[in-house]
Image (cartoon, rainbow, N blue to C red):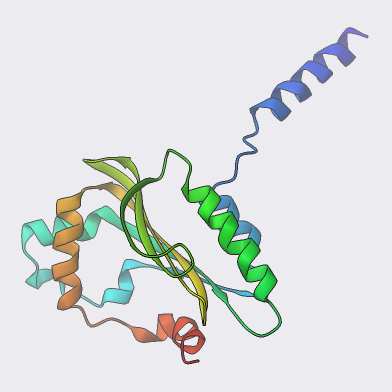
Length: 178
């Protein structure tokens, strides 16, 4: 009998410790196989950068970048209602206090927002959420270690000289050829 109580207590603790709150990571996992979505994981190798030509500051910015996860909902004539539901789910997730909004463009129905997770000097994740009523929406998570606004600006300058491997982005290009 005592063994049963111990087992029940352990099971209760395990169930209570599970976080049931929605998160972008869970949202990505739940929708990766959904036919309405295109999911891509992009590594820093997409940039095709000659690291020997980078400054120390540029190398540091590049090293703070781990990967990018992209989840895009492709809108068509048959999934308009699902589009509205999924867009509302992402909006709800991004309203969580852990996602600090940096900027927002356009309106809620069409536009983009940029958020981050972490502190100003130790950013773990940047999130770009863009939606367009004719095409669908995309959520882009840029994950890294100790990223900061300076690293991001430096990374932008690195991107300008990058020879980006567009083959990794082919599914997204197809989506927006509408």
